Length: 235
Ligand SMILES: [Mn+2]
Image 1: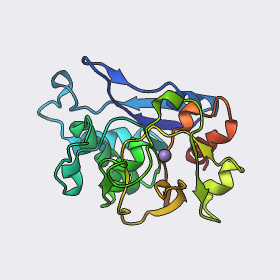
Image 2 (image 1 turned 180 degrees about the vertical axis):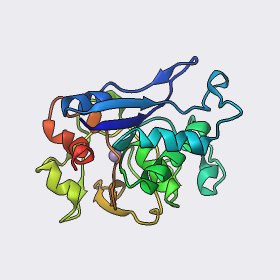
Image 3 (image 1 turned 135 degrees about the vertical axis):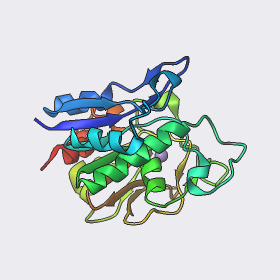
């Protein structure tokens, strides 16, 4: 059975947040979900003096067969060399650092990475890319539709021949819950899907798949949205 490491972030009031669909998809496909908390995210979980982030992340990634980076709040703009704009929403700075380290270690160990929503944003930043801090002020449509969390809101146009297009088996309607989006692509990443207004909705790289929409909230009604999880679990 494949062990899939899943990262996640904060809710409010000292609680964590992870949509059930992420581990749910892994279980449905016969894998074992392993949740990895951003260890320095709260004072009570700060690293012991004899532990470094690097050594811990190395240990975490060696325990799993592949990594799933889940959704969450905005990425801290200083991670890609920008000042915050007024439209920036809540950020998770410690999670940014932790997930970048997890992604880099997964790449070092040759393990696949599936990144979803905020995940694809931190993935892009980790690979040296930048983000639109707020899609609407950057000139795009509203991509934040929490009222339609489990329903599709816009279509995506796939690049012909992309791995994801093949796996999606004709499904082109997606939900959209993101406030930010990819601006400049990180090194080694290529855009493989766009929304009609031109937002990058999926990326691929060597052992990397990034999806800007939320398949963990759609596969229950359309199993074709298990595509990314299937890719992650495949040999
Ligand atoms: Mn979208």
